[in-house]
Length: 153
Image (tube, rainbow, N blue to C red; front, side, top):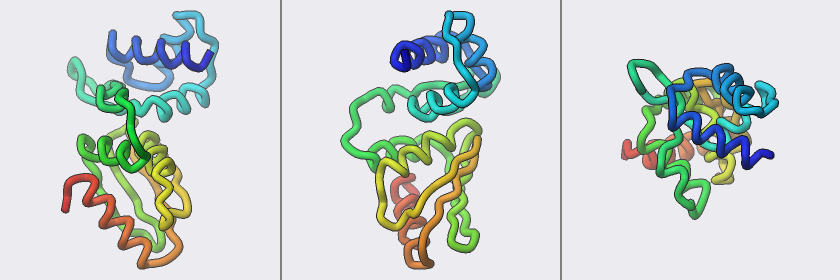
């Protein structure tokens, strides 16, 4: 059922602008899928959906580069960060990553998949990811690595 639902999500975001997870859930119900907000949120993260400008509004999209087979979590992270604006700030032993609304889950999932030893864990909201690290040295290494993947270095 998950594969069918995610295929329907891909079709929906290709066919028309879907601005929110609530709109996505309603569109899925119209297609006969019974789903919850939590399920839709996981699907958005699993599919790597990002928000892009479309028909004068910000709507979900599945970039073609995310459909391609990827060799590692770091490769996926590199592809995401290459096309998304990213602001990185320090807050104690946390890195706060700010990006486009709807994109934080995809970044956090790719970061988790990369399994960097310096990263203790991450939490994603809509446009913000908190990345926890164990010490200042790790914080600086992760910050430099993210900048390099995003094309900043």
